[in-house]
Amino acid sequence: MGRLPGDFFEQRTARQFRFRIFEDVVKACSRPSRYDDAALPWIRSLYAGAPSVALYAHVPWCVEECTYCYYWGKIDKRSEMQRLLEAERAHARLMDELCGLREKSVPSIYFGGGTPTVLPRDMLEEHLAFFTSYRLTPDAEVCVEASIGTLGREKLDVLERYATRLSIGVQAFNDRLLGMVARTFSREKAMDVLREAIARIPSVNIDLLYGLKTQTRAEFLESVETAIALETPSITLYRLEVRDDPPLVREYEAAPGAFPSEVECRVMRAEAKALLESAGYRENLVGWFLKPKVADTKVYRERWEKQTPCVAFGPHVQNYGPGHFYINVDDKEEYIARVNARSLPIGTKYELGPLERMYILVLALWKSNRPVDLAELRASFDDALVQRFAASTARYVDWGLLTSAGAVLSLTPAGESLLEWLLGDLIQQLSTSRPAPERLNDRRSLPLL
Image 1: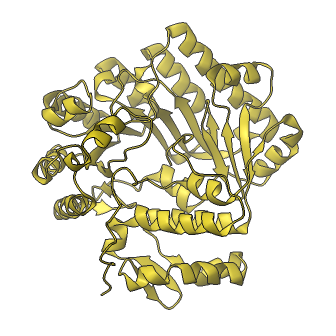
Image 2 (image 1 turned 30 degrees about the horizontal axis):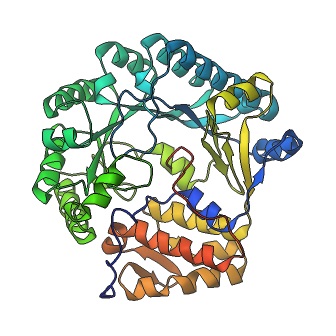
């Protein structure tokens, strides 16, 4: 059994913690280029041989600005919301013409944000109806992000017709903590809404945060116990991130000691996992717990493990698949204008080499709770690249974060708990080994996947 270095947790705090995504790998070692329509043949080639695609539709508005969130967008007037949603649908039709999306099967659609359920009922239904008119597979997952304050019965009527899964950012069943992070609902309100949603939608996921300012272990575990008592089908545990943009950063910098340490956060997670597993939940993806009869979270299996291309609609969102990664333009007005001019609203594109593709696959496998088989990597990538990766993981085996059985590297329970730190270290090694990479920063595109 390995042991972590004595200084492992020094400087590992909420301020440095990051939930690692494909974008981190791409920006660590790839040079971006600006998109123009001369690259249309490249775009077509990305999807020409793909039998299926995952879709993402972005709704960037929220009713409230939670102090920890860096994906918040202030609600526009109805007419402005309508303009953007119409542009997203026009963007989809343009991609249909260029790449034949309607001829491909669609195993998953994700409506993210922001908060899609802030939309008026008729606008929500129109958007859901449009995107679910694609060639969905019989077991397709249609997931919609939602918030407690926007899930009235009329919205649930709409969601019941189109969605197979809701993802709701509850964060805590504790009125003190909810008020502190500017959530405007109460514990009781959250429980009432969840009871109805769980009764009506095939699968409901809730997010719970640990590491909040002054949050105790008992408070976090009480929230987990409440979620279990509600028979919530899917529960995701997230460690708090403190980034540059959200209001929370000022609180953190004024009193970092008021936030649980990384060691305390690891204890919270371990005890929550034990509670969930004793209640019959299984850990599907790392940090994602499902009741026994709940199907795997398909959207992430498709995008992460299977590497199904994801086509995204809306400003400042990611599109990715094997060998490519591109980001739509940031500005809503530019996005709308580009679509209206029948030009793809792409801002930045990256063509990925073998190194980036291999590390993205590794990230996807470990986040999916799957082992990395070096023999399988060698079947797709140059042996020198695989050797380099294997050498970079040796210390994690020594530290007890990975096991090495022959050519197979698997996460240990400690490795699951510290996965984001492990991935961050690997990505940092990438960024320091390539000449003049683009510098990582806190401004991320969406979705957070």
